[in-house]
Length: 84
Image (tube, rainbow, N blue to C red; front, side, top):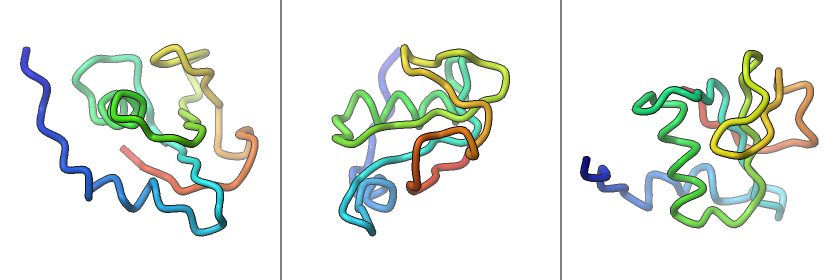
């Protein structure tokens, strides 16, 4: 299956730090392939987002080999959020 083309400017919002530290949460990250939450997370990882990525899903331990957080209250710090 061909990968969808990604418009890098679309990721500018989540990758431009407001505090000097780029990080991103993916609220609604999913283990199911071809879901919006999984694709956002995969694109951040595969296209070289340089900061930490925090998937948020109360039902998952890890997604895309990244530790998941049950809620935004549980992740280690402030960040920009991509909601799916």
